[in-house]
Amino acid sequence: MTFSIVHLSDPHFGNVADLQLIQAVEDLVPDLEPRLTVLSGDISLRSRHGEYQAARAFVRELERTAPVFIIPGNHDVQWWWRPFIPFGAQAKYRKYVRYFGPVLAPTVKFPEAVVASALTSHGITWGSLTYRVRDLAVKGHLPKKAIERVGQIFAEADPEQARVLVVHHNVLRGELSQRMGLARWRQAQRRIVESGADVVLCGHDHQEQSDLLNGKVVVSCSGTLCTRTRGGRPAVFHRVTIDEGSISVEQYRWEANHRVFKRSDVYTYPRPRRMDEAEVATSVG
Ligand SMILES: [Fe+2]
Image 1 (cartoon, rainbow, N blue to C red):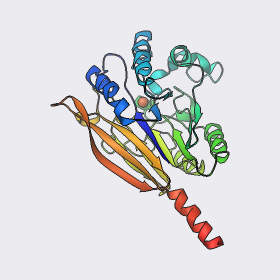
Image 2: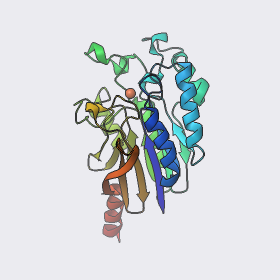
Image 3: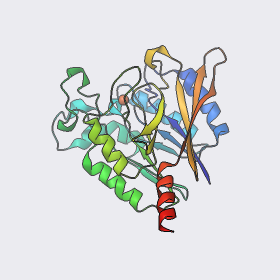
Image 4: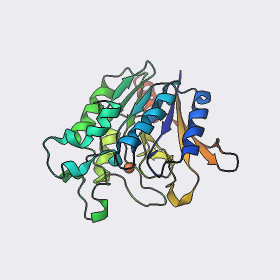
């Protein structure tokens, strides 16, 4: 089996959206033959109607190739509606919900894979509080309940189904930003490993990255599709391909001279949990 996901993030529709990049993605995605396209948050810049309307048109175009799996990022939360108030939290997501539906942490199942998500964008809440004032509505938080729900979904999956987790905030430290996306990141990383995920898709840092978390979970952190790339570098998005024995993350890098995304670096990992299972099977047999 081969299961491919086009992984996009942080288009930030609004005045920083780069329509050249958006159009190039629309043109290329059909050739990449994904079974699913994931848009891991920060759809908008300021949660405005016009931004979401443009994003809807983009999603509709992508849906001509494959279903689109979408979650909100911190820019898609109108946190000023309910700072610190745990009740009526839905108001913060009212506009996002109007355009992308009421499910903030969707799940989708294919014969080859189970894709589940956890909401890490909560605006200003006690869980995401940090000591840095500028981080206030930016940092994410991975609540225990949310990751336990994902762990339950993965536990019910068939052994041959790959387990894919989608969150908005980067789960590894950004190379240039040197920042973690999540508050209490060690705890969050441990929870992600314990959830049983084979691969986690995230964004938020605006710099692409792929590595292994704890030697067990493949991380695909996709770059942005807006003009605010980290360090002014070319934009990058990912295609993640899962087969029986491996997971690969291919990077598609913007080439300004030719106005196209070109396949560049490819990271391939053995499916680490499959290795563990193989060892157990050998020792039992
Ligand atoms: Fe973000």
